[in-house]
Length: 343
Ligand code: X2X
Image (cartoon, rainbow, N blue to C red; front, side):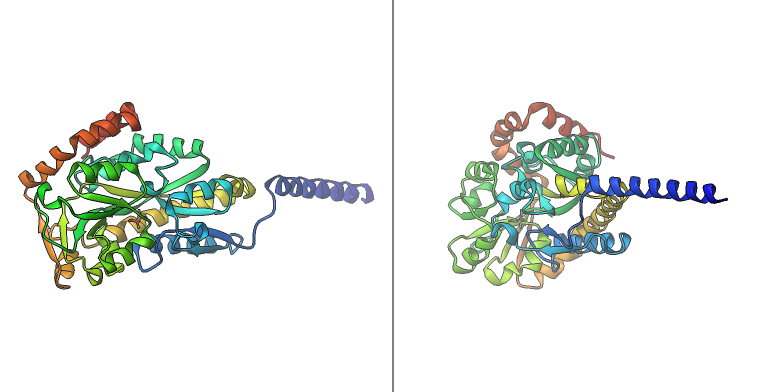
């Protein structure tokens, strides 16, 4: 009996040692993980962050505790440096726009190709299909672990001066654009005067009239109350949309147990689904009720006829062709095929 219980003890000790070594290879958990976001929980984007963080906290019984850092505050508001900071470990995890990471990952410019994605089904055909998989492999190689897709949304053009119906209406308008040179090319091709600045700088620039207009999803327009900074004209041209990507820093990812990684991944997928629904609310329905709410704020909403829209497609085509080569013709062609085959 005595030897038997000794043996039992030895086996139990060995098992414990294994568990301990396993945990050691993974490394210690931090008391808090920093999640970077451009905007807070008043926006669908920030809501997605809140949902992800809450799901992870619940499902890991608090082992993984995430704090939101909106305003890209971990990189002093410079959203174009967010991806680098994730790679370097200044940021533990993030939900980032493909636009903001495109300075480091040129393939993410795909979604900013003017008029590539005519409708929500086209976005889904890319993110949820082979193209999405290819892009995740690229993000992974660039130095972060991609887990799920979310969505900022279709970026509509707004300004303080006039209703835009033709490319000519954009002539001479000073337009704030985001961090990729592709946007400078697009707006230059349209005859506008684009200027690149961060989201943090954009709002005061609109308020002071230093710039006349900007482009952002309607959910950003309403939550940031852009009608109060002179943006009284909105044109629904749906020229590009920016998906969001849920990622984790590689070292942080490696420090978690297999089981916790699975939880964080599934939580990102679940949060991404919910986040996309929130982002599309009021816009994906046939009558687009959100537009009525915005019009009620004294905003003129211009809807283009197919022919009017085509004039913008034509004017930006040289930019599309130039960037097709820069992004990689193979990837862009795969995207074009996926869009054409969408159900
Ligand atoms: O800066 C923008 O326009 C925003 C908030 O949409 C992004 O971060 C891409």
